[in-house]
Structure formats: C-alpha cells, structure tokens
Amino acid sequence: MAAGGSATAGGPTTSARPDHAALEVRDLRVRYRSIDDHGPDVLAVDGIDLTMDRGEVLSLVGESGSGKSATLLALAGLLPANASVSGSVRLQGHDILALPERARARVRGRGIGMVFQDPGGSLTPVLTVGSLIDEVLLVHRGLQGAAARAETEALLARCGVGDPARRAQAYPHQLSGGLRQRVAIAAALAAGPEVILADEPTTALDATVQAQVLDLLVGLVADEGVALVLVTHDLAVAAAVADRIAVMYAGRIAEERPAGELMERPGHPYTVALRAAALPFRPRDRDGEGIQERLPELRGRMAAAGGTGCSFAPRCPLATDHCRLVAPPLEPFEGGLVACWRAGELAEWPGVESPEVEPEVPLAAIEPQAVGWPGQGA
Ligand SMILES: Nc1ncnc2c1ncn2[C@@H]1O[C@H](COP(=O)(O)OP(=O)(O)OP(=O)(O)O)[C@@H](O)[C@H]1O
Ligand code: SF4
Ligand SMILES: [Mg+2]
Image 1 (cartoon, helix red, strand yellow):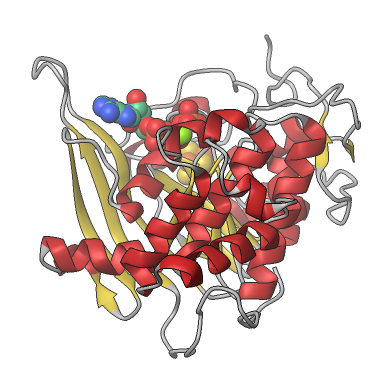
Image 2: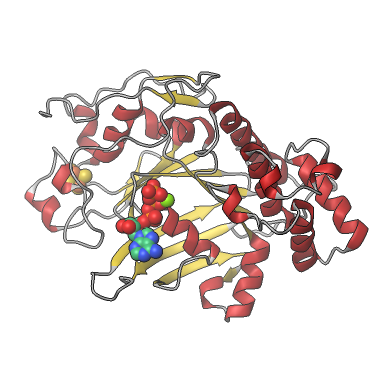
C-alpha cells in the first residue's frame, strides 16, 4: 500500500526502478468461443484500461461473471485454448501481447506472479515445495543448488512459513491451506516480479488465516515495491487494503477511484448498490462468524457484455432512454473515473445518502443483508 516501496536486502530482485508504470493495460478484450461451437461467444472483457505503479494495491471487485478472472488470466497468459485476447499489455517496457510467444512467456514469467484462490491447484503435487520454488529461481534468476535452496528458504521465511528448511521438503498436500497459500505467494515472488495478480487468494481460507494472508500480501507491496492486483468479492476487504478500487460490470470498468473516496461517495449506481450490500462494516470475528465470502446477488441479471447502451441500464433505477441507447464512456470523476451519464447527480438522488464508513478498520466483514435499491419492491 505504501507507495514506492523498496527492495528488501536478500529478497527478490526488484533492482532498478525504471520510469515506466509496473503495468499498463489498454483496451484489453477477452472473448471465449463456445466450447462445442454451437453456443454464442462470450465477450468476458470488453475493452478495459488499467495502470499500476509499484507499491500500489488495486482491487478488482464485481459480481460473478463480470470478467475479473478473465482479466487476470489474460494478463498472466493463462487463458484456456478457447479464448482470444486483444489490446496492449505493457510490462517492463514491452507490449507483451505484441512479442513473439517465447519472449512473451519470458517477460511474463519474470514480471508477473500469480496467486490463485486454491493454492493446491497451482502447486505441482509431485514436487516438494522447495523444489518447486528452486525451479522458478533457476529459470528466472539462474540460481542453482545451495544458492537456490538458501533463497527458497529465505522466500518461505519472508512469507511467514516457520521452519522453512523443514517445510521446503514437504509436499503441498502435507501443508495446511494457509501454509500452501504462503508457499504459493513465495513461488509467485521468486522470479522477482513487478506485479502480483491475486485472484480471490483468501476466499478458501478461514477468517483468521484470511487476515494473515492479506496482511502478508499488503506487506509485500510495501516492502518489495511490487504492484498488487487483488480480486476480491469482499468490498469491505477492498476498502481496507486497496489504494484504488476498480468496479467491474459486464466486462467493463464501471468505476475506478481511490478506495476511500469510492466508498464515501460512489459515482456509479452499481457501486452504490454494492456498497449498500456491503455495509455496515464491523471487524471480523476471530471465529469467522458472520463473514460473507461473496458479493450478494443484486436483483436482476447482469446483461451480456458488448450490447447497446449502458449494460447496467436493465437494473438501474436512474436509467433513461439515452442510457439504453448509448454506452457511457469512462470519464474523470472526483479523483478517478466513472462510466455513467448521471454520475454527478447521484449525491442528490434520494436514498443514496452517505452512510458511516470506517475504511481504516482492518479486514472488516460484511453483514449479510437483503440487497436492493431503496424503495424497490422485492
Ligand atoms: N473457459 C471459459 N469458456 C467460456 N466462457 C467462459 C470461460 N471462463 C469464463 N467464461 C465466461 O466469461 C465470463 C467472465 O468470467 P470470469 O470467470 O472472468 O468472471 P469472474 O468475474 O471472475 O466471476 P467469479 O466472481 O464467479 O469468479 C462469464 O460469463 C463466464 O461464464
Ligand atoms: S448510464 Fe444510465 S443506466 Fe447506466 S448506470 Fe448511469 S444512470 Fe444507470
Ligand atoms: Mg473469478
């Protein structure tokens, strides 16, 4: 979170500080072809732009199917074979989508670390966790033998794995979920990336471990100076740990603003609805009671991406005929960007009063409650 963190001695090499952003994404589009070739294609990501600096946490929030994972998989080069991607992704000064395949894989492997929701799935089951990290160090940093193992143990220790020499000899299935996620983070850090992409990294963990793993990720951002893109369904977590929040809806960014400002005075009706669902904040229970893992469903279905007009119009109480015909562009709004023709009017709209929020409450939880626009029938 602290801007402009610095590399830790003995830690991953984030050596020179080039003057380009850690990550610059322009007009990213991801299209999934129907697997059996009969159904329609899905435009999962419909032209998004993102800029990340080192030492910064950006949280991507949005309901299921809004394109968060497709965005991260496209950046990491992990889309399945039925997906196609376009746009530009600048990493370490290169437009990686324009590079030949081998060069693209090399720049990505070194520049991006990926952390998934299920660490079990991302750790090779037949390798000890030490061998797995040794291999990343060999491929991306040329370290071998004792030097690699010493660095592996240092990375494990940095990620809060106690007794790293012993744990390095364990297989993933011998570790708890929280430890596996710490190992996955150490592996993501091993190449010395500028950017870590984390897709719901704590959803599968219990509340106490969730908080510890989030603390670890945010600490790495400050200490190693990496940029973190954190996908979470928990708007309260996003508000507590992110510098900026980008709210995704139907493959596009509906609103992207500094976290505190977005929570205090949302500029997009969808953000208002999410925030109404997320409040009130309260500190997490140690035993996890009352923790809500996913954003609650809002009434109505999310429109498919790529249609005419504003994709939120079918669910928006402020929609006009103009909204239904012409999609609003992302435009500057109070320190960030909002895609809504009526963004400036939200503060005056009855029922969109600013509730009390406590963004400084660490790792707050969401109180489950019915979601809907004030005044709307069930
Ligand atoms: N392999 C695939 N083939 C076809 N369509 C897919 C595939 N993966 C995802 N999709 C579709 O792409 C859209 C975006 O999916 P994505 O997984 O990015 O959503 P998400 O925001 O990550 O949702 P969640 O919060 O549930 O993880 C959805 O309509 C989804 O059904
Ligand atoms: S552009 Fe119109 S329909 Fe879309 S969110 Fe804004 S007010 Fe609602
Ligand atoms: Mg997802």
